[in-house]
Length: 301
Length: 253
Image (cartoon, rainbow over all chains, first blue to last red; front, side, top):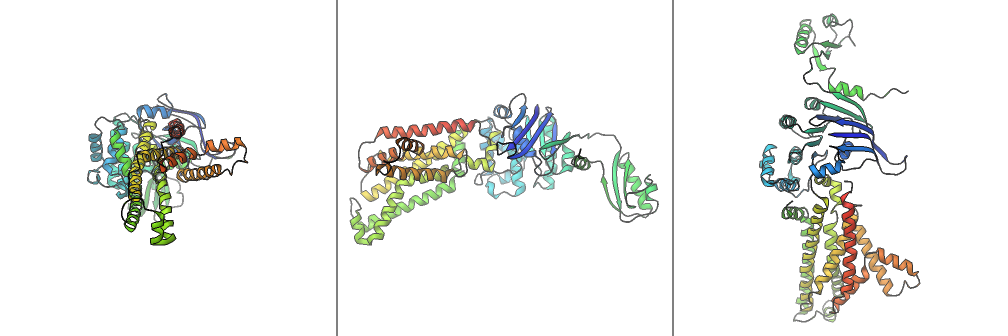
């Protein structure tokens, strides 16, 4: 579905040394129906990547294709769902008129009915007559999601979709993504919330300094052993042996590899019986760890 | 795409500016009404009568008002069209439209048409109303040709500049003022010493103030409309609109 070959984007300045290199030599392939996460620090190039993917910008070098077409040709022909990082609409528009107007632009035959349906789906019916400027951060984000999901597009790009959403709507958002996944849509989601990303996607692209540092597969049905980091309030004699370790990191911090949550619970129970006070337990092989490893500075040659 | 719905949204989006322009127009009408009340009777409100009532300040105020009134179509067009594309691009709205299977040309064309129509209608209500108040008579349909020329020219110029800069309104105003000064100097013969080619190039690049001046003069002196000048202004605007259409299709957003 999406194919980038050596895509580079430079802003400002025609000379090689001038301008800002926002994306450099990015090559990747994303298949139809996949859910891909895009993560990385601020300024990593995520938004520029999306801007090139949706045809807002043209590459300085390389080629970007969506379904065999230049991105802008693709969106003109098929459209795409898009939620920008900082979503806004003209402040005087009402929520309902905004969605109806955008549904019109989507060439949806029953624009009014679809707008109403989407308002209900995102819990915006009671706010439908409010001006956009009167919406809270969370409601505005829901309006952003509503306009992105207004038409049933194959390609959907969401930049920081859970930003500003309350816990209830974060859960609903997961359900929305599950629905879209079941419909075989191609989704790209950028987020700083790695726990959320890990729940939602099949694959994570780690970006930094305008380049792809790593592409990580997320296996939701993995049966492999998992690593946990257990931190005690103070050192306890025999804790390391109990966890099957010859020594601990600092006498009170242990990293152990266990089969599953059942084994983890058993070991924690044994530690408590020893008189240990458990300060924290965190997965040591979660996405956060893997992203952190991918973002380690490359060793100098 | 329902043109009616898009037009409504454009009007809502620009509602504050429209209200501001209506308030500005009401000031002119009120001033004209006060002048008429002070002078009384029918016929033209003469400067001599105003001088007797309020001295130089009164005359100066009315002259300034008269000059400003003549620029109202320019002011309305600049106020409404500024940000036509550049503000959408800066706020990210253009990206939201861009991911939808809609022609930018059609969408922004419709927006521009709506804004120009609003500028025209507001000016077309204000200027003849003020004329009737001050002159005591209907001055004829030529005023609509004059308003149309101003709206078309400054609308197309601002729209074209809006593709490239957020300062399009000020830039169009600056170009318009430069053209007025240049044309006044040319008419006064102050530019006779300048090389002919330079004069021609500058006159070609700047908005066509010469033809606009002749249209305005013909209207002021109740002479036949100079259709050649109207055609020149229309052609200049059409070239700008054509260039805008060509650039907007592939403009990065």
